[in-house]
Length: 311
Image (tube, rainbow, N blue to C red; front, side, top):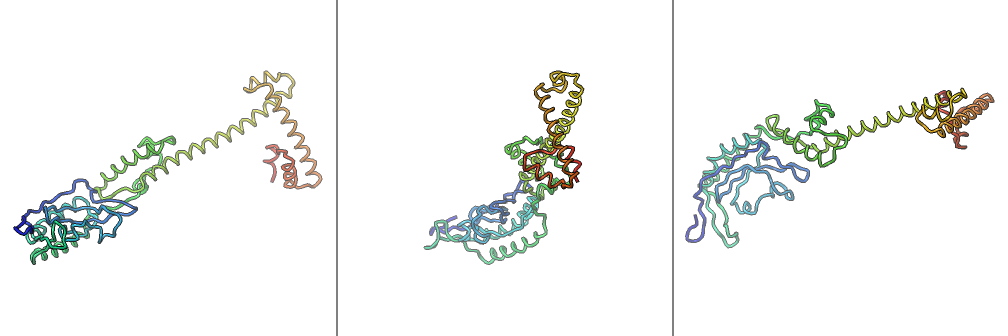
């Protein structure tokens, strides 16, 4: 309470603010994990474990303005799980109370309206003891980052896709929603000591893998179609060579028009001429590579059967 001169003497009781979320102290900003502190407000007695909010200053400077004048005390602590941090808060409570009991905040000509805090001998001793206490928590359970891909290393990407309803057609909005759900699931597991990273990127890899599978299927279908088309054309030419069926009836069997039947027959005749030319030139000692280069320069396609037989 203030005296007649406006000086404020700490007559308050420490108030501990426990953490509830297991990974409450974890905060990632600007591509880094923010430092964590035990903080005591000398004016209202609030004792809490917090993560740094600002991302612009180094840890030793990233403190509220009130701390510069001693009205808030901060001690750097490991990135503890909520359970460990709450245990530290409980142990630190009596020491924090000694600090509160031995502090007074006086206004000076150069200080702000709230004044400057000073500690008596016992409060300073309690401050030092608090430093020692924090050191004993260096081996306490802490929060670690774990890549989402590592978390799901034992599962096939297709399993992840099935579990979360991801398909090759899933858009980024869908992946954003799933990423939030997966992150929450991971944080609720493994004793809540891990925070997932790269979840959205991992889901994109899963989706892109599904899309690559569709592309591969299309390529396979295209190859099958090419083989079936070649077989169809060969059958068309064979039936047509009998001079029994009309082009129209052949086309109905093949699912093409009679004009296409005629064009297929013309291609066959052209390929025959190419085959004969190649055979003639080979017999004269010309190499197949030279023959192919010449045909390509003339814009003549080499029949599939001939290409397969070439060394």
